[in-house]
Image (cartoon, rainbow, N blue to C red):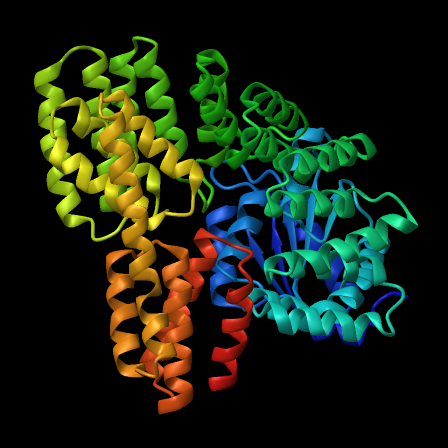
Length: 536
């Protein structure tokens, strides 16, 4: 059923296209069907400006917007910055029919993808179907945006009781929510129930995720391979298969998996970066260079543009005797990204390139700057920064600074065997294998003691002391997800007993969100989110 014209009159529209003729055509098409509030944008920057100033009900966006951001990147930024509500309908429109463009757009989930030329009847029919579904999922999507996973699960269950038309999509969303809420057993039961009816890639991949979270990497690999066999274009299965293969110490297979994925969808900056990183680790410099170049190219105008691909490309250049090009890339990174942690990583990478070219004086100068930057860096969100800096410090004889830095890396990642293994490898490469093993073990032990301090005091009824102790632990290990979760737990109990403090609520929420960023899928995250919401 087509939307009535009086309903169209109530909606706000944004048309984004770099050609004036197409903007005018779409505007007239909408006006003929009762729309009155229609804004126009001629490029990506203009679109973001418009989206920042008004909430739209419907966005019609061309994929190719000329120089700057493309349609996918506009959608990506709108979702990440929450410039659009869960009820907003986003339709991607383009004359481009290549699978590269289509897969790139579909991967970031517009509500529909239409190939030009389009008719008014087709557009209105698609809008009608999408908006009806959007209204059905609005509350669920808002709960997901708020990371209130338990509420979102309850809303899915309530809707599943009567909405048979959307049952498949509701079960897919619920399955992912159960994983996000730290309930892998319940998620597995749901995925198996779906698969008992028919083979669906998202359910099969879901079982792969469950296996991965349980540490059954062989099972994860098998499920993801089955998912790909069912649908060779289901990209999430490739990502999880590659993760499982890396855990199984199969880097060559993981590289091949990601290489196959980027053939299907080459315009994913993140996946190209992951491929480049794997290839660099394996010494496949030609592939690493291609992947990092592509990642930089497609991510240039993205809101998620990050320094990792640039730094990876610089490392490739350094390893292939192109030091001058590497240093030019690092200069570009410094211009684009100004925060202290990026400066630290740039300087550490620069120093390592100088060591490769035996320019020990410049390497030593870079290491000195790294030590100064470490004083300015209260905490590092990316353990790679600490590892890169420590490698340079060790290679230039600054052992004391390197040891202190690596101890902090271990404390913040004491349960992450991959990171602690990388720390041990750095010690071994510096001829400190035995000492390194002792330092890693001591740092792990210290992390556990600090992590448990507040919780133990809380159990003894010493609430004030518990909060002070866990806050000290958080300040010492600001990127340790267990410490952050423990802080939120102690803060919640404290407020349940002593009354709500808005500042402590915000402090606990900040800790929770950071814990979820570092280690998503923790059961306590969802439970503590619920408890904090109840306090408010």
